[in-house]
Amino acid sequence: MGITEIADDIGRSIEGLGSSVSEALFEPVIRLGVTGLSRAGKTVFITSLVANLLDRGRMPALTGADRIRAAYLKPQPDDTVPRFDYEDHLADLTGPNPQWPDGTRAVSELRLSFRVSSGGLLGGLRGLRTVHLDIVDYPGEWLLDLGLIEQDFEEWSTGVLDRLPGRPGADEFLAALDEADLYAPFTEPNARVIAEAFTAHLHASREAGFSDCSPGRFLLPGEMAGSPVLTFAPVPPGKYPRDSIGREFARRFDAYKREVIKPFFQDHFARIDRQVVLVDVLGAIHAGPAALEDLRQSMANILGAFRPGVPGFLMTLMGVKRVEKILFAATKADHLHHAQHAKLTAITEALLREAKDRADFAGAQTTAMSLASLRTTSEDMIPHEGDELPAVRGRLADGRSVALYPGDLPSDPAQLLAPAREGAESWLDADFGLMNFAPAPVSLRPGEGPPHIRLDRAADFLLGDKL
Image 1: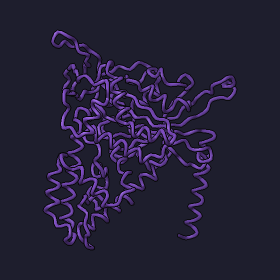
Image 2: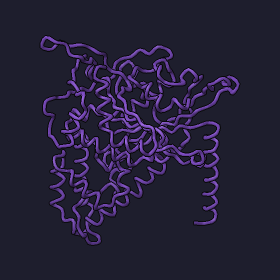
Image 3: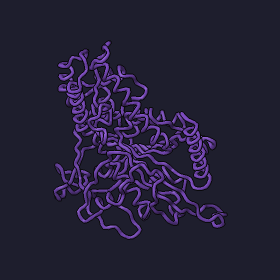
Image 4: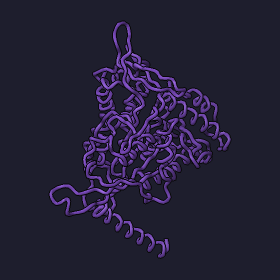
């Protein structure tokens, strides 16, 4: 490295330190990471959160909301990160023909700034202060990749192959692996056959409701589609010779960690200080015990990627981030009658107990709740065998209005978690339904954001102390 490059690095470090000091002392910045596995509702969560922070008529539980004098969208500080397309997503959800927006496929960011009056007796003398909220949206599939950093290729391969039996697409991948000579000299066409079969298995598993489907970039390759760094697969342990398929796959796995995972961690993830993990618990329950157990294990592994705890003042000035607060949110609460929301929250807390305990022990504040970022249903009672069942009514994509009783969640979460841990193939005495409701037409009054369930409580946990 030349002297000029060293000087440039020192200059950038000083500039970064100055920016950190300015933010910590004068205009605090909250970097809120939002993630969740596929179909957990990340895009809808961010869109509705921002809309309801701009117009706070539906946010009674947000501490300090009455002190916000203005909220506005500002240019984000990271010029090389795509902006979260808030305006188009809001138009999709609240337009004359509402529809679900496209899901998260890459990292994006949005800055929402508040002008806040100070509290206390001297609040009127201090004037207004500025608080910035930087929301970072990234695919949960990429978050699962962080657990690969500490694994070598053989360890990763063994773990994947051990959990393959019974998963969708596993037989086809194993057949491709059996047909290949992993000790033979490497050729790109042969490698592509194996890698494509493995990728097809990951896609099929995700569609079936499984959560641990890493490497995540195989599912969301973006500009890396077709590149060698995404053309590998797990193989049985062995002493593979130089230039063989097995040895090249191991080299590409290391390249994936070095060129894909570590830059994501350094550029985005390591700078987050508050985090939302959205979890489609209802979808996993509907998919069956195996999917629910896979979700539990995935959430525990995800927590291993966080650096929870509250940083000291000096660490804050130096720009060192630790995740101070983590919200685990079970989404789609509007698919249940409110009488079952407490059960969904209890199941979520039990499901994430291992992950939550680990974060609590490290000093982070954590909580779990059930919510709906955008309420799509109304509650109804439907007759059934001389009785009435608490149901929800919503609109399907074809415009039909239907009522759904998804089944009665157990009061004791162990009735679901125990058979899931024990490898049950189906729920013994229950069947849980799930329906994909479309966004309901909504007429927003001035000062109100989109309707939701407990989004104000989520915002209060994440932001209330800074307002």
